[in-house]
Length: 152
Image 1: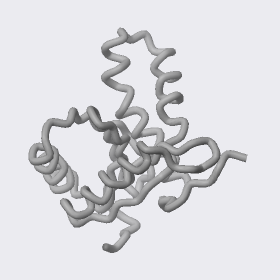
Image 2: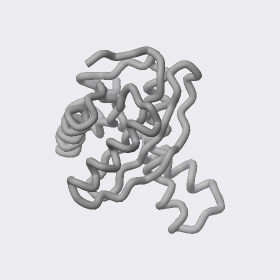
Image 3: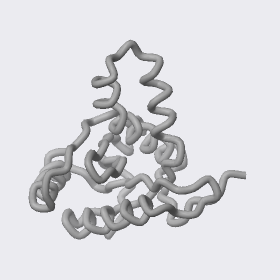
């Protein structure tokens, strides 16, 4: 799979129940929240992600890796990698991985300052976490991390 430096990419905040999705255009370099997808079944999930890739003309997915502070991967990291492998096979697109260590806590802090109900805050959390991760990915030069390092 090639890794084009132009086109649209999707940032994925993987979850077993909900998946936060953000989109960015590599030429513009700005990520925005897209939506939260609530998982249904493997067949329905496959249909959704194939349609997303086609409709948004995606060239790549960036899947967030929830790693420990020392850089070692967690069980959720392993699940996110399995999901990324599935996405790559399903869509034929490149999948990269990026450290998402603090995205959820950063998203919670941002939403905590907003005057939103608990229900609305929860509804926006995963897509905002995906946007924060995708923004960090873009700021890093749009390069994935096979093995995120520890926090010094």
